[in-house]
Length: 302
Image (cartoon, rainbow, N blue to C red):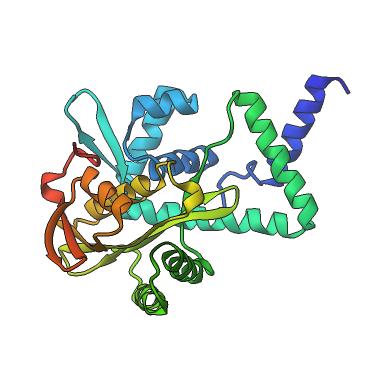
């Protein structure tokens, strides 16, 4: 076979391998294109139809019909920003629930495919996929991605908090016990409509995490923001906090509160940059708040 035919043969093989020829994807009512648009909306802080049309190389009319259908289903809301000609798109709680269902099933399929391979073969496959992306785009793959929590993540969060804070600040196992208690309550009382946990991943390794939990009907609480030392400088912490703000706004909370320690300077800078205000102090302990009603239209106040 000549080179073009090899490319075409691979495309036919892989589209069949990941089941994209089906009318709907992953037992959902959505087509592959609709699921991709939903993915982009879930993983962008703020976007417009024009940006999606350009980035996904979609026909504007086709994308418009998809977005109109999402609005009718209650998946998407459109908001006017400073420029009323540009309507910003964001997922509703129902849209985010639909995304998480597809995202979880997609992850299960990918995991099942990899599970059939030996560890060396898995590494070779992942490296080959990265090479294809790098060669075709002329740039390396995205430095990290965000996903929802799954089994094993909560134990990782507890372990890494305990280990790193002991190493960097000398905090003893009582802090790890505190983290374990917070994590346990999150799992036991988890309400997906009002609460969420984000996991940042790079090359299959977790590099950060954060939780948003319900404090009252009107107030959410940001908890356990964490970034691995190797990932500092990538903007992971800020992105995780921005996701909390976006989710809380969509869940109709009026305020986000958080508790931190004055020694955690990097975290404090993130909170301040994203619009949180220091409300009270008790020794080294600090309480910060963000009024979401005055934060509409911006997730990164200056």
